[in-house]
Image 1 (cartoon, rainbow, N blue to C red):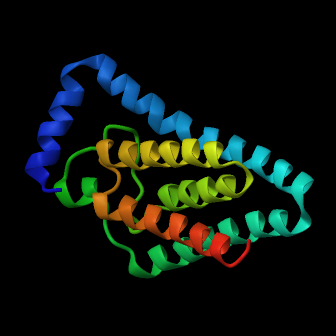
Image 2: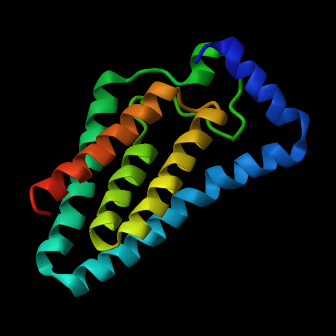
Length: 165
């Protein structure tokens, strides 16, 4: 997305306080929803089988670690650094934008849920998309950051399922 397009979206959010409040609420609430949901997913995985529990622990941990190391090595700037526009949520972190760790984590957790319950997995995929969108709309990630994060998280989860997770 180019700066001009983002500025139009940003002005639409800022012109109505309710829109901006909704974005900020989703930005803050969705990640803890995923974290709490992940705890439930792990409990259900443990009840189902040791193999499923191990898979649903190891794959998300590996994705989190891989994304953390990769983004530190690549160290791409965030939109508010590049465009000199303050983000719509308080944030002053520099670099480490690509890929989005929130999107990657939410994506892989959605796939962990998929192995436990397909409807819950689908719901968590929607939540992951909401997390990704909120990061872009808030101006803290580029579309490429969240798209890469989601692709990595969901891709790792699908691979685990295919390998018999």
